[in-house]
Length: 105
Length: 157
Image (cartoon, rainbow over all chains, first blue to last red; front, side):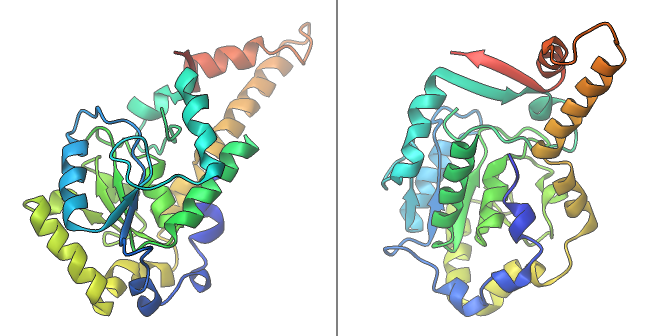
């Protein structure tokens, strides 16, 4: 899988100005998040829950869900529940790394 | 694979509607930085990050993300995020890096992406197989072993 960053990151022309950044909100929400695993070792669910109460947020994952995932992405929930790929070395041993676990693992 | 890429594209396209993306990892393991952060950056969002304590090593600029651990509590963090939403100066502070040349450490990290790693694995397998002339080149056992031992674990739940 190719990181989409390779296309976008270095091209400043593709990014909007401060003004249009500040207009970025969807149905009143300033932030988006995708969380599928509610049982995280670092207390993230609680921390996110607190933050979502204070900052209008759309949460699309299976955890803390308050927004509908687009149909194009819904297939991932069922496929990843029975079969997962884990980057073992990427996850734990190599520095630096940037592993890419699937969303719903 | 294309379907996964399509889903990633859809996710990133959706994220472009938001000023922030909350990128909360499921552990605070050092160097455990996942796609959550990269997708947020790719979408032009300001990532709000919780996770690896050394995440700045993975950022294109120290201000490219808002780090949860820099704030004393969630209320403090939320105040700052709401301030950003109202201040073009603060938005500029966190997005200015996009107008600059990509930092060398970050560009180098992108070159060592998962995609590149898979290519490296395939190259290693090709080299391994070509060093064994009696084996048919299309045998996959070398690839399976390399993937099992060095890169991927295939988990059946």
